[in-house]
Image (cartoon, rainbow, N blue to C red; front, side, top):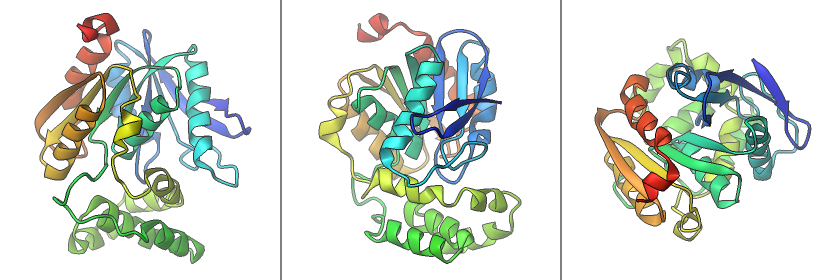
Length: 265
């Protein structure tokens, strides 16, 4: 494990593996860098992979007060550590953060996105307008387990009867440990609408990948690709939102290893 200090002094923990062009991995939801560890190990055969804990997760610090800008300062510190420029892979809400980082002008050479979690139509219920406020209230009451359940029911869209039994699973406690960061994610995503005008300013080559098993995420993937000036679309048929690392690896490797000039052609 390595650490780099962000602009506000917060230590950001990361694992560095491999040799080759640099790629930074951004996770999402109530997880730490372990969620991307298997894919990072596979990518490290051809790339230098920086798999990090976002602030408030895992081994990274969490300096108060929180502000969205701090997330991008964290990523910028990692890009500097990687040599001043890097490719970025983001999953779900992490894909949204990757897009926002590119729109802000961070030194990102390519973007690879797995099922960015914008909501673009009525194929699923909208996230309630008070979603973030309810997370904040639950956190103030110390009800971290209820925060995780709210994330799965209201943000992910899972039926409550599927979520409730999950509370007894071994991974639930680990998610509760990072539950406060769900407030951070909700602050970044806002109402989960797709910011088409901002995305149009993202000029870096991008691949948007979905698994074809969650219709609203497939629709969103198509909409994101359409909004970006230089985007490709890929569908890995039969893959759930929790994509198998070995299934996504070939698509990622092919895109990341192709030169920007070739992608432009």
